Length: 147
Image (cartoon, rainbow, N blue to C red; front, top):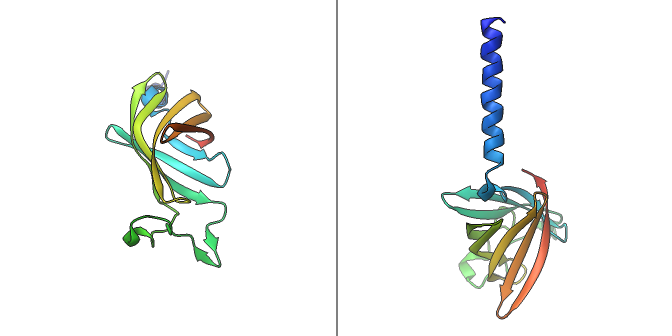
């Protein structure tokens, strides 16, 4: 075999193994883009240090009356002019093992409230979002759009 071909084959193998190893990291399973249950927005989840966070990267209806939607229901008046698009709504999630991320919060621009939440990944293409509101829990399912 020619030396350059052997070198190329080795490089491809190392790169492929590296990509597969990274994708197989359980704690990074939620990283990617997710379509919300109502299919009206897409959330991009990323990792920063040991924490995971998510922001709105697409809205089905990004404008109202020809103007971009803003965080109008935020309890802090100074934050009400923030655009909804690119708004961080998930923060502080930590991998707990067994396909679960907890200790995080989810912000609802529709209500202006932040809730405790837990994320779980029963399948690679489905993210279960468990939101706690007082003593009540609400479950919604998001669908993976891209890794």
